[in-house]
Every structure is written in structure tokens, then in C-alpha cells.
Length: 97
Image (cartoon, rainbow, N blue to C red; front, side, top):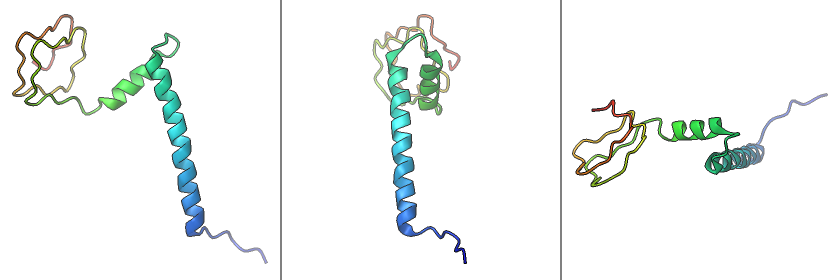
């Protein structure tokens, strides 16, 4: 008779390790393409930055004296209690203010 395949702990472990390695390699490849800033792959960089900053950035209580936010997109940015003395906001998206 034909026996149904029953996964064991070893099989599950091997599958988990294999999937982890595949995702690590693919993620590394996509990250490398995003950091190269080639015009061919602007979507990769956009996706990587969007994913990394999806919850916004918190500068809560930070010293940002003379920081340069030129052309920065500051959506969902937390600047409460931050020292903003001399900050450059040139052409930045400052909808949070």
C-alpha cells in the first residue's frame, strides 16, 4: 500500500533553513541593486526605502543642530522635543509641521 508522506522534525528543519537561505539571498540581491542607485532600477530603491521607513522616523529628543533635510520626505516623522536649531529645510516635505 501507498503510505502518505508524514513530515518529520528533521524535514521541517531542513525546509525552514532552505527557505531562510533563499530569502536571505534574494533580499541581499535586491538590497545590493537598491544601493547601486542605477536608473534602471528606481523601483527597487523606492520599495526598499518605503519598506524600511514604513513606520516613520523618530527623532524624539534628538540633537539635530544644523542638520540638513534638503529635499527630505518627512512623512510620519516624530520631531517632538528635538533641538532643531539651524536646521536646513530647503525643498523638504514639511507636512508634519
